[in-house]
Image (cartoon, rainbow, N blue to C red; front, side, top):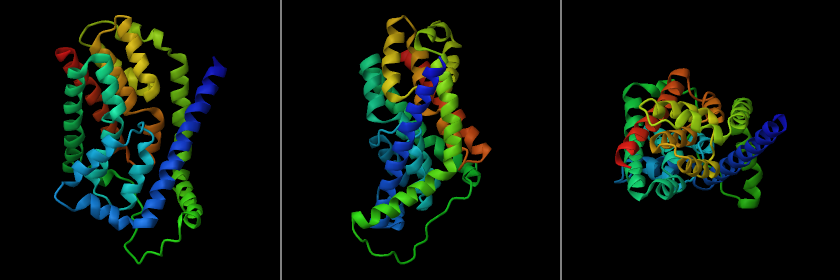
Length: 292
């Protein structure tokens, strides 16, 4: 069992480090090529409201919950509005095509449409509510890049070393929280195999949905694992609502993500984020139970 846990730890950590560095390096190159002010202007100006742009960007970037962090840091560093950045944070892991397609395959396309509408509404409403409650003040100090006069673009080969240094700078304060979160997630993931989840989520009773959502969050069920797990549970006779809550809880938040968010979120905002993901998982589970 220890060997399996260490293997899972290494696999998850390797994936997260690779994804973070690739995404963060790409963002650094984009910022160097076009400037952070252009990202801010594009996200803030135009006929399309900026939260909708955050929603669309989240929907077309099929990242897992942890992989949204470098993009989120890049947005905040560029001065993108709080509500827009938080809309992206919620929608990217929950509204991406892999999740929607998987829900359609497992539960049917009517359920997938219901899920999409529900998650879309939450992704827009929750950040607005956070802003109305003054949650922006619960962001830890974020380095906003100034306007200034940008240095000329020197070509990809010349710019790559600087982008890699910037990616490492962004990763460094998140590294310890990432290690802690991955260790927790790998331990739970290894010691709670999928075939034992039916004992927790199999009963078709009212408290099965919230219980499954709570269990799902620390499991860190990755996208490639979550869908076959859901299909297996459905084949084993587990009710649709608990399966859905388990999957969304695992996709929307995880120990690595929560640990890394703690580096940029104060406790009030961090707790609000986790509660929001729980609400999506539980509310969606009940809605799916009714409509399925």
